[in-house]
Length: 109
Image (cartoon, rainbow, N blue to C red; front, side, top):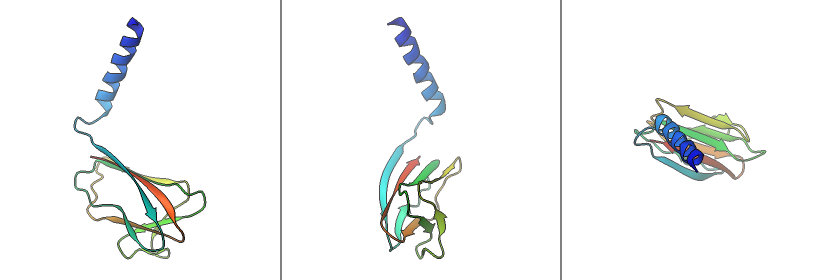
């Protein structure tokens, strides 16, 4: 029992050291299809975010509101894109794909 308490205390200390004091984590699953939708809303308080394409075959394209599969930045199947540190999102990031695909989003603020 003494060892379990010590291990728990050590884990709590590690989490305290690596987690910002007021961190808030929000997650969502966004369905991207042939019409552009907001994947990552503007957020002046973001300190980090991760976008993950859950499809095994479909590429997702990222960009501004007029993004298309021809003009967007590719987020390949089964891949992620992240930003940390100065991750403020001044303008929303939209997604579009050739067919329906789910992209997971995690934002830390």
